[in-house]
Image (cartoon, rainbow, N blue to C red):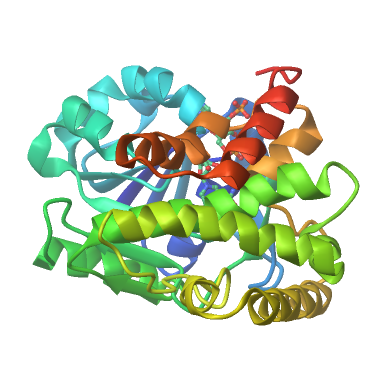
Length: 338
Ligand SMILES: NC(=O)c1ccc[n+]([C@@H]2O[C@H](COP(=O)([O-])OP(=O)(O)OC[C@H]3O[C@@H](n4cnc5c(N)ncnc54)[C@H](OP(=O)(O)O)[C@@H]3O)[C@@H](O)[C@H]2O)c1
């Protein structure tokens, strides 16, 4: 298949690089320094998949107008704040792409893509795969789960085009499933990333990593309490937790276990996380939002935490922990810059 990835930073480089390594034809649209470094030395991916350079099947451009030919799938992977600029710049791609999806975090991104590309071209997609741009030309693959990517038709169902995209991702080394209800995956993913990100920013602050925070019992208590606020809203929407991204965030267990046992479970997740990070030589152990805090850059607070707060208001549900965590994140975000 031919893929074009608009906004090839941390995650886009890992996904694009892995797809290209598996033989897919990939065009990355990214910033000049990163694109120039890849053109000069290839794309280095290190971390959980090993340490290797990708050169074949990879084209790097700095503007979508420079991308040649037609594409089966365009993947939008800028941060949310850059979506509008990226879509405006990609106008010339609109008629050259068969499908469009976003692997960004958040809810509502698909509606925006439908306005841009037309209703039928847009497919639903979600991933928990973790990627960080360490330096131009070098991305760290830091996190995956046994099933790390989901695709489905936005109005429900699985079609041959969904199966084809899922097969390409699977073949590239990402555990992938085609699902009939991608909307549920998107909401559960937001609960997952919202819990991990909100907890990181409020409980870890700057010095600590994910496993550090789970080593202290109070840290794991904070995690479960926040997860349970998200769960109240998710269940009121009519969903039951599925643990799409197990073993990260075990929402089924958080839902049914007494608090003490749920906290024990989360502390075990922290231990396994640290062991995995050590084995792969990876040290970051941070969510995308937490990385932004570290780098002094604006966080996706309203993208990642606000949709659940809005739903809670709409459904009349009290979510004091989520409300507090959102407040902490907003205060810190006010002092960061774009
Ligand atoms: N990283 C993860 O682990 C992860 C996991 C799951 C989901 N996500 C989601 O994926 C999205 C991307 O995250 P990320 O961590 O990969 O972000 P990132 O590292 O900042 O990558 C985005 C890249 O796009 C570039 N960019 C922005 N506007 C552009 C434009 N108009 N043309 C070309 N390049 C442009 C950015 O450059 P500048 O930096 O110069 O702006 C940056 O290099 C976010 O919505 C995030 O929540 C991330």
